[in-house]
Length: 252
Image (cartoon, rainbow, N blue to C red):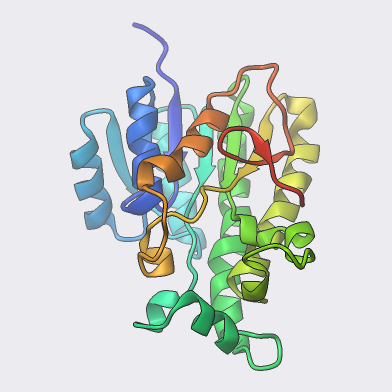
């Protein structure tokens, strides 16, 4: 029986995560579709095909994460690729509000600490929780890969440049959560370098998704392609990098 790598994609019931899952299946992977709502995950997996399997995975719930890791171990016995895609912006809690209006309402001087904690709980602490739970499976798989789906708006270098078009939206909620995710990416890459596990961050670009109230300009196919490219890197590929399509480095 031919070797079939296994990938877990978090937040894969819709948007970029679903597209990443579809693309990985087309590259010969068995994909575990992580979804906070199991029924939505099942529907997503069914839309992909027989090589996709839904798992209930709420990245803010330790019991959910542990159960997902146990199920992957029991059913597949391995994990070759972990794509940490699950994220929230809290824009969906402000219907009809533009990205610019949202950024003004979440400036450091006025931001709700509860809102900031809620977003960071998913985008930062959730990523670390899943990493810790899945690491034994990844370490047992030669040449495993981790891809953290970040955002160009998390770049401190870019946001410090007056010419950067998205500079005005940098704030402590979503953008800074991605800055923190980038820091985690570097820390993970340093930790796992001796194991031969590559850890990289990617930006999907401004993709039309629920995260931004469907105001994005890029398609889901375009948004997924860099994550998939990095997931498929060979043993000579880089680690601890932050890129957008196609292998264009984003400054930290």
